[in-house]
Length: 461
Image 1 (cartoon, helix red, strand yellow):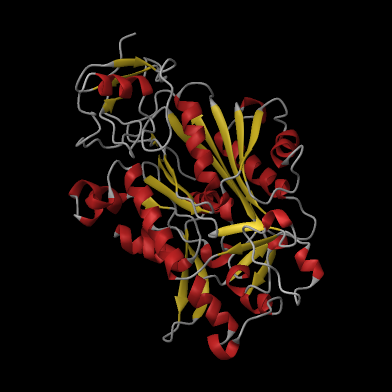
Image 2 (image 1 turned 120 degrees about the vertical axis):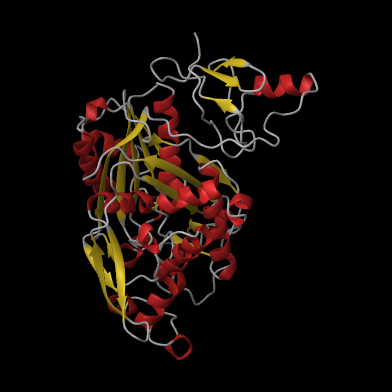
């Protein structure tokens, strides 16, 4: 098989000097070819290694080491290329049906000190930029939200549930563990013969899911993959911990990634960047009374009510260090997805700068201040950054996909402030994603798990 040589890259993190010689005439991954040495390696015979060597065939690494040659990654400068055979073809979303304003939330919160922090509503707006958030009504399973989002995405993609090759279901608030929300969703969707599994990536779950979808579709193993991010976090909120309880919300997002032949250049999907940095205390969920969780939870006080000890609760670290870490890592994931490093960003690389100036950013809606910090770090215009945090809060694994669907269908959100910085209203602006735009979706979640995917959009609502 003669490789088709098109400039490209399989992994930005390791900056590998390969071309897309691995795509055959149908765009299916078959071989890798090294640009300097003409080394071709069969894709099936060369397993991939994750981590710093991600995307670099083990056989090639061992050959370079054994013959004393310089690792071709060193000093290379390879830019990412959209794979036009891997396309976003549909999105969908569904949020909780109960809108909880900051005024209403204040009545649920204990432990807030207005003498120290000021009035509750303005304080929440200041530290998170969240004006309201959706909660699900009691007993509505997470998969029910996912089902609505999935149907929307399939309708947009113009495919039937039976056309799906795989469903990736990202969530850390499953309503059912076995058979599992992913199985319930597939059954109720009418895709009961489709491969499906649960991915536990916390807030980075949908970005990891999109990364897996890219691999399955790019390889030719699947034609259509449905990625779900779905959460019902409200039942796990600890309302005596104001810093955590004010953040989270309930919702589900969906995206269909499909193999498309003869798609135009400048559209498709970039190879994903995914990474990990261990943090035991950044975000954790469990029952404080469970002895197995003593490593993660402090010894509970005798004053804590028994019903709280027996509930599964979420805890999350806060403070400037968490904020700075989230900004730095999402910025790094974003530029690495484009084939660059933070040094290129800091040095004002003109190619990177031009790419960021014309891109749309749909980041994880972790916290408004984190989104503002990421916008500043990347030097992007605020109007090119999607913000659903104002009304939707932080939906963890659903966050990126709900924000993407909002950007595709409706546009963006913006706050109207008075002279003293108080929120007067939150309104929708019709700045929707257009055909041909590059959309970047960075995320970071508990673990820490982090990553970013890039989409060259080939349709618009």
